[in-house]
Amino acid sequence: MILIADSGSTKTDWRVIDEAGKISQAKTVGLNPYLETKEKIAAVLREELYPQLNTSIHEVHFYGAGCTTPSACALISEAIKTVFQEVKVAVNSDLLGAARALCGTEAGIACILGTGSNTCLYDGKEIIDNIPPMGYIIGDEGSGSNIGKELINRYFRRELPPGIKEKLEKRFDMSKESVLENVMRQPYPNRYMAGFAKFVFQNLKEPYLMQMVYSILANFFDKTIAHYDNYQQYKIHFTGSIAFYFGNLLRQVANDKGLRVFNILESPIAGLTLYHQEILKS
Image (cartoon, rainbow, N blue to C red; front, side):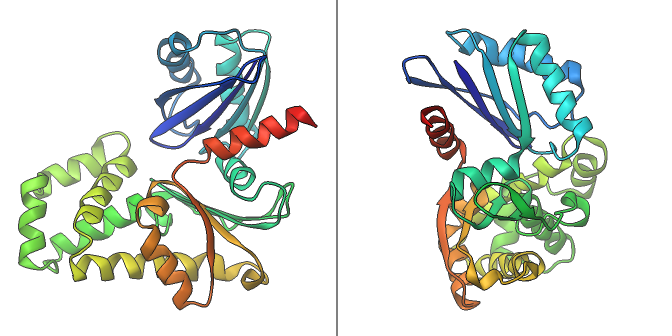
């Protein structure tokens, strides 16, 4: 029985492949080794995940945000082994998970656009190049937190048109005190800022917001995709909530830059499940 996880900053999607090949699913909060302790991760696995499973687990493949160093991967692995004892555990980055889900065994550029963002050049087996996203404070171009941060900035710089400003104030507490509390003192400010992306999507017919998102996505291509060698020669694929919901605009930006976007998946978990099913058969 194989347990597969795709974990972002906000949520984790789980799939189980049992002996008969039957697939079941579960969900928990995101499990990022840079944001959570080993004990907290183990508690989530024990209290949120374990009750959703109806079979014993022998092998775990975990793909997660923040799983980019040996120490981060070890933290996740140790937490898993405290709950699922005597299991084989493989921990890799969410980026490799995205590449395997989107590209399979073909070379391509795989991109994540969700709460955060990331990209890589994939040769069909491994990641061969990666431009570090550098997190929501410095980078994460094109992400939900990037969209939210830009909207908040424009609000306080008094740049938003009156109609959008009024809608925003009805939806959120936009007092300076509230925003600074959530950004500076509360946990997960990236999730807080990404929460504004849903408002932007729901009001995307507003030309001002459409142009704002267009420029954010254009900047994503300019800062990341365009810096991979021979990037024009590769298929470009996306996964993540931002890529999925803003997919039409994303394709438009790419087309205006002479590029073509192929697969766009809301979540890579289905592609990852298919990938591991094929591995089992081989």
